[in-house]
Image (cartoon, rainbow, N blue to C red; front, side):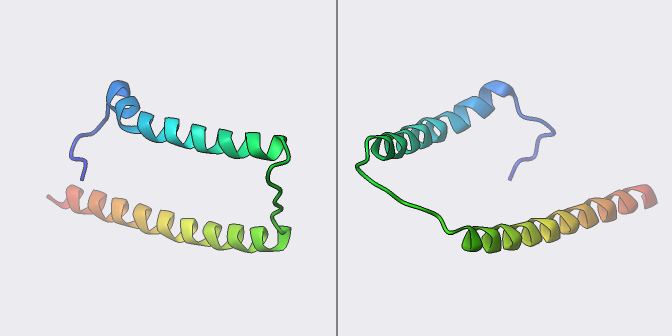
Length: 80
């Protein structure tokens, strides 16, 4: 749990850099394999649209829940 109001750019980069490097190498490897015809794949658009819609609903509900909690905390802070 983060208890500070902000995070420095140095900490953010130090925290995410290993993941960025790992994902860049992994995706670069897939792109190279696809470019040189070692692998071939396709994503059906129907399943992609269904998953995208489900993720949009999930994120919308989570965003609404987070805003409601923030607003409730703000109202509670004004009563004190």
